[in-house]
Length: 70
Image (cartoon, rainbow, N blue to C red; front, top):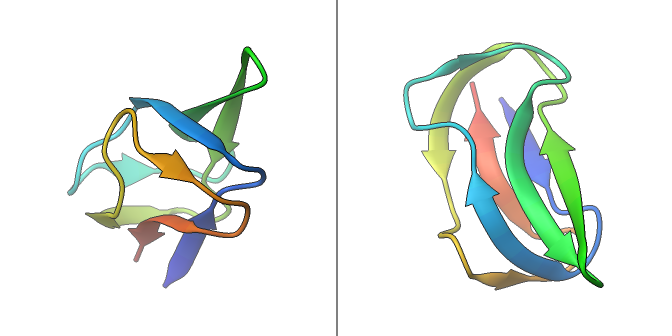
């Protein structure tokens, strides 16, 4: 099981995947908006999205878990 974590504080601009989607390492999971920039947060492992813990427009801090990949 792998946790997808925020690399910096910001707002969730877009969630690119859904629960149940198969993803590959390096695939975009969430797009984070911080300081007027869009930062893609990617999967660090291959697997299936088990859980998404955020909603679009939520504010997150660095290190917050955004999704779980199994």
